[in-house]
Length: 366
Picture 1 (cartoon, one colour):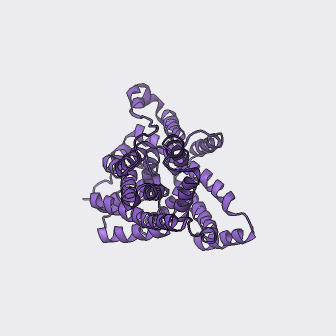
Picture 2 (cartoon, rainbow, N blue to C red):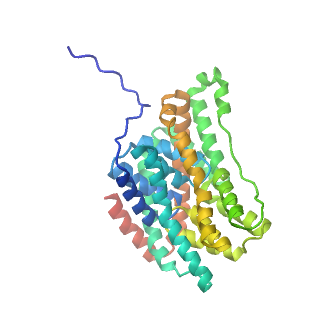
Picture 3 (spheres, one colour):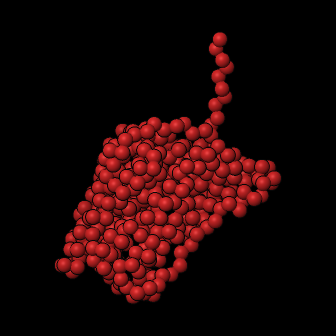
C-alpha cells in the first residue's frame, strides 16, 4: 500500500551530485583566466556558471556558502571557489578548485612583476579594463537580481538588506554588518528560543589584523603574508590600507609608488585580488618571494574552508543557525549591491561604456 509522503522541510539541503576532478579543474581554470572585476564580480560569475548553467548546487546552498566565505578571514571569492570545489568533488575538489582559480592570476602577476623590474613599468592595460568593466557591471546586476530573489524573500529581510546598505554608506565595516545582520535576524526569528539558550550568542568571534615585523627575506615575506591571509577580515576592500601601514610606513619594504603599481597589476589581471602578494613577493625576493608570498596568502583559505565545509549543512538544519545564516545572506547580497553601485559609477563614465553595458545586459539577461 502507498505510504504517506514525508513532510518537506524548507531548511533542508538537497544533496548535490558529485563530479570529477577533471571537470572541477577545467571550470575553475577557465574562471581563473576570465574572472575580472574583483570579489563581487567573481561571485556573479560563479552563480551564473555553477547555479544557473550547470546546476551543481541550489541557489540557497550557494548563498549559505557565500555567507560563510564572507565571514571567514582571507580572500572571500577564493574561499567561495574552494567551497564549490568541495561541494562538487570532495576534499580533492577543494584543493583543485582553489589552485586552478588562483594559479592563472598568480602566473600573470608574476610575469608582470618581472616586466616591472626589467623595464621599470607595467604594460598599459587601460583599454582592456575599459572594455571589461561595463560587462562586469551587467554580470553583477544579474547576480544581485538572482540572489536577491532568494535571500530577500520577505519584506523584513529586504528591510534588513536596506539597513545594511545604509550602514555601509556610513562606513561601518563589512564584517560587523554581516555578523550584526545575522544576530539581528536570529533574534527576530528565534527570540524565544534564544531566551532559553543565551550561550548561542557566544559562539561568534570577530577577528582583526595587526602590524607585522621582521627582517627582509623569503621567510619573513612568507610569514607576513601567512599572517595577512589568516587574520585579515574584509577581503580585498581592506587589504590596501593594511599593506600600506605595514609594508610602506612600518617596515619600509616598499614605496607608495611600488604598492600602487602592485595594486594596479592585481586589478588588471583576472582572478583573486589577493595575488597582489605575488607581485610584492617578486619585488622583494624574486621568484622565491613570489611563490612563498602566494602560498602564505592563500594557504589559510584552504584550511578554513576544509575545517568548516563539513558542518555548514548541519548548521542549516538548526533553527537558530538557519536564522543567523538568513540574516548574513541578506546582508551579503546588500553589500554586493553596494559594491556593484560603486563599481558601476566608476565604470560607466562615458557613452561608449554605457552602450557596452546595455548591450551586455541584453545578452546576459536573455
